[in-house]
Image (cartoon, rainbow, N blue to C red; front, side, top):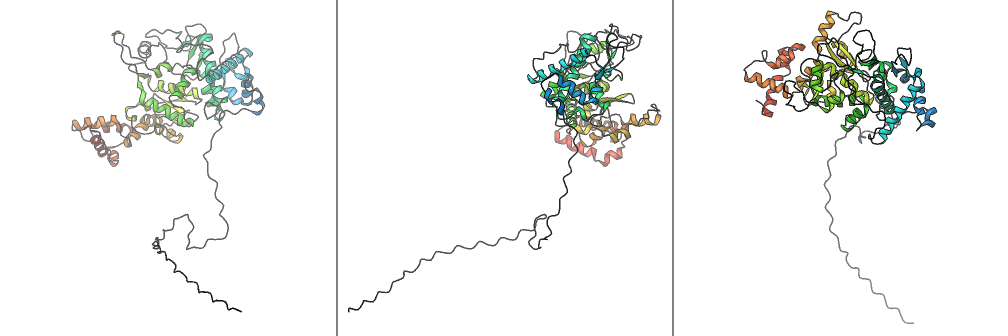
Length: 488
């Protein structure tokens, strides 16, 4: 048997060695960050500690809430009746002073209105909703001239200067339009906040016709209209200091100028900011002729003409027509302007009277101004949010103490007088505007020291001493700002 040939041993090829990659240098350990697990400390095995719930700012009721019992009426005019029935606080604030031939009562709230009166408000409400749905165009409701002509032509030197509307063609349809718009704003949620969150007093400042107009008294006094059966602007508390505009003008003005914010307080601040950069204090005294010179209206300044701007006419020089300005009739007129304008977005405003001046109180937001002139005070035209102009309740009460049992208390009067317009002064210390720089440069040009200059004269009536202002480095900051702007 032939022997098998031995197999040749396999020759193994040497493996090609790949060059080793250089190792990355070790990164230094990152320092332990608070709030992250620490590797050097063993984690406790007790389970997670329960976290405290986040505190949310309390929010009032929002508009657009339809009671369950009323939802089948959506789209029907009867939804208004149902909604008011389920919100009696709002219904009771809708008050009108009917003429004697309508009712013997001096005032009627919605639940006691006649069927004819309710039908008219129902129709006005539907007209407002249709107008809004049409993109705020083609209003088909009752036409009212804006501003309504004053039916009480006042002569110079007359004892009373009134703005009077005809009952059926002006006062009543304008009141219906204002209330209908307010209810449409609430029910259809045109703004986030709600009427349902206001007190009865606050609601009346939006909805009560008795606070807007006063029926002819026929007694020879200030409320006795020369127009038969007229309604005098001012109302029971005499707070309507301007001629209101139709809500189909005021509401678009607010929305189209981005003045409506996410809250009522933000909206107030936006409107104050518009006032700050646009309004101008009227000149002279408030007489029928001077009112006509400023607003071309012989009566309370019309809201529409304040917003649109009017030229200041000079009867002695009729050929010269200056550029229009947004004239406002002082602290009382500005307070009334804010009251009338903000009513279009369901923000109530009332007026406080201290030391012969008028101060607006944004009753729903719990905020005040230290003077109706604050927004357009020259010192307020500086770079800070307009919301800073507002005072809270505690500050207002300490600055403007008032005892209803002793309204003329001398100590209270003195304190109030010292604080009229104080908020603008306090802000001017830290927020330097062009007006303060102007006075600083004049003082510098005249070689006046701190105590004798115009800058100090602005602050001294409100209790500031030279030492107080020097402690804030006011003059050093004024010098730096003047140099930065190349003023002086």
